[in-house]
Image (cartoon, rainbow, N blue to C red; front, side, top):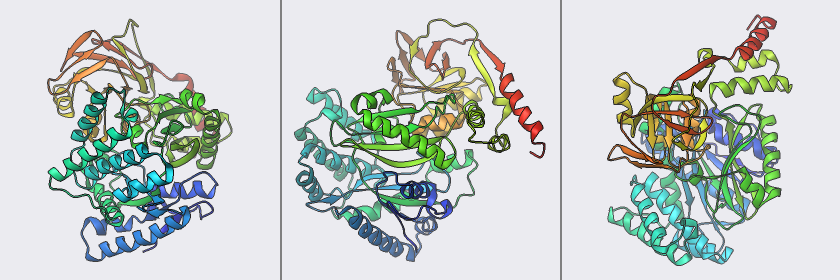
Length: 528
C-alpha cells in the first residue's frame, strides 16, 4: 500500500480518486510553495477493507501509520506524543468529492499526559497544553468512542460560569486542568478508555474516520448530492498547528469570493484562541475579516494574496481553512466553494469579464445548473424586522417555524414550507436542511459546514441571530420581544440576515440581463 507524503517541495499531482480531494489539493498547495503543514495520506482503497473488517486491513493500517509518523517526525523535528518536543496530529477524512462536515475528524491526537508536560516544556504555556488535552479528550470520546458531545459542552459551560469568565479561552490553567479531569472521569464513567500510547490513539482515530464513511449523515448526503458512486474516504494525517496558543493565534475559514451572493470580495470568518473545528462546527459565532486586519495587518495581507493565488491555481472560487499560529499563517485545506445558484451565475460572468474563462468554458461551468432557480426574490413590503443575524445563504424563504428535522417533516407533509430554527446547526441536521425552505440559527457563522450545505442546496440561511433563544424540547422560542411556537409563520432574507414575523408577500423577478448574456454566449458557441 502506497503512503503519500505531503511537504514543501513534494510532488503536486495526485489523483483525488486515490488519496481524496482534500489531500490532492494539499499536495498542489505544498508544491506551489504555500505554507502547508506536512502530512501523509492513507488511500481511499483501504476504506472498504477497514469498514468490512478484512483481516489484512488492520496490519496495512498499522504499517502505514508507522511509516507516516516517521516521515512527520523527520519533517518537523518533533516526537509523536513525546515528553519534551511532542508532535500532535489531526486525523482527517477526504473523499474524491467534497462532503463538508459529513465525515469525521479527530484533532490533537498524541496528546497523552506525557505530551502535555512536553508541550509545557516546549512552549512555556501550561494553559495551552491542558487546552490541547481537553480538546483531544472530547474529540476522541465523540468520534472514536461514540459518546455524546453534549455533556462535554455542558461541563465546559458550567466551568465558564463558575469561573466568572466570558468564554472558554478565558479559563486559566487551573480551571483547564480541572476541566480535563472532569472529561476523563466522564469517559471512564461510561466504561470507556482513552489510551495513553499515541500509536494506539492514532490507530483507533484512523479506523473511526474510515468508519464514518457509513454514518447516517454521510450516506444521506451522498444520496442528496448524487455521490453514490464514490468508493470511500482517504485518511489524511497532518501535523497540528495551533490556533489556540495565544492572543496572536486563531483559526478561520475564508472564501475567495462571496459564495452566497457572488460578489467579488473575500468572505472571512475567524475565531482567535481557537482550533479549526470551533469555526466550522457552527457552535460559536466568529469574527470577520476586520478582526484579522486589526490584529495583524501583515497576516491579513498574506491571506488576501493567498486567496488570489489559490483561485488562480485551481481556476475557481476557493473555500480555504487556515490557522494563525503565533502570528504565522498556515493553510490547512482548500476546495472549490459550495455556492448558491445565483452566486454560480455571477462567478462565471465575472470570470468571463476578467478574462479567466472564455464564454464556452463559462457555459460548461453552468452545465447542470437549474435555470428555473435563477430568479431574484425580494419582500414586497419592507418593514421593521423582528430580529437580525448574519446572512449566510442569499434568498427569501417564508414558512412555518420548526425546531428539529422531525417537525420540519411534519409541516412539509401538511403542505406548508418549513423554516428550520435551531440553536446552532451541525451536519446531523442534513435531513431537516433538505426539507426546510430556509434555516435560522442563534449562533454560528457564514463559513460553518452547515452554512456551506445550505448554500449548496440553495436554501436561504441566517446565522448568528443573538436575539434568538430556543427551547427545543418545548418547541418554542423567543425572537427578540416576540414569542414563537412551532407552526408560526416566519419570513427570512438570507442575504440581509433579517427575520420577520408572519407570512410576508414575496416578489419574484427574472434575471433578464444575466440570462440574455448567457443566450449570447450560446449563440456564439452553438455546439454547446
